[in-house]
Every structure is written in C-alpha cells, then in structure tokens.
Length: 201
Image (tube, rainbow, N blue to C red; front, side, top):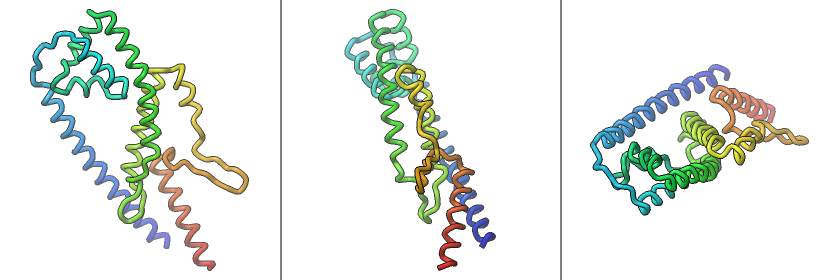
C-alpha cells in the first residue's frame, strides 16, 4: 500500500514537473514574440487627451502599462514617461489610475482564488503546477495592490484568514494557501485515512 502511494506520488511529481517545463516554454515564446513586436520602432505619437484617457482607463482596470504600450495604437512606454514630465494634468490622472488599479487587482485576486477549474488533472489528482501558478498570481497582485493603495489594502492583505480554521468538530482548510509539499502530505494523509476507513468497513 505504501509503495503504491509512493509510486503514485512520484508519477504525479514527474507529471507536474513536465507540465511546469512546458508552461515555461510557452510563456518564454509569448514573451519573446511580444518583445520582438516592441522592438519594431514605433512612430512618435503626440500627446492626445483622448488617447491618454483611454490608456489611463485601461490602467485603472488593472492592465499593465507595458502591455498597453505593446498595442499598435498606443505610444511607446518611453513616450508615456515623457508625457508625465511635460503634462502635469496627465501626471495627476496617471497617479490616480495607478491607485484605482489596486481595486481592480483586488477583484482579480478573488476571481483567481475562486476559479478551481484547473485544480485537478484528468486522473483526479491535484494539478500542482496550475495551483502554484494561481497562488503566485494572487500573491503578486496582493503585493502590488498593497503598494498602490497601502491605506486600503496594505493592512487588509496582511490580515487575511489563516490557512486552517477549526470550529467545534469541523476542520476548514484553505488548500490554495498550502505549498506543494504541504498539499502532497495532506493528500497522502487523507488517502491513508480513507483506506483505513474502507478496511474497517
């Protein structure tokens, strides 16, 4: 029994490693293609209230300035920094958009944490690569939101519920807060407990 569990754990680890490597290659290709696109010289774009407002609205919705500037109709990021220096009104609106972005990022954290569609593999085992990536996405957004709006989210994010809560005879575990090794240990313990119950039955 123990050998079977160990063999399954090893198989899952190998599968998760392979999946993580594949994801790394995919993201590397995406980033390389994006960088190649940005490398193509953009024509100099003059300051426009309409274009600036559209860009700031995208930023306030949580989109990064880098990704916005990669779009064809928007200026290069260096041009945006020039706008900030030369147009005080734009600089004020830019700072406000950054602050509003914290609210959008916080909402994204909730959506990512609630999305369990990729938590399991086809065989029913935990998809650790997807879970770890979701955790990284939430943690990254939490840190950024805390920096952009520290008075609103700084203390709130530090006071998030603990991983494990025990009330009377019930045990509640926030699996997304567990590391990969902790998840595997928890799963092994639950499988062993299930086997013991089935053997007694």
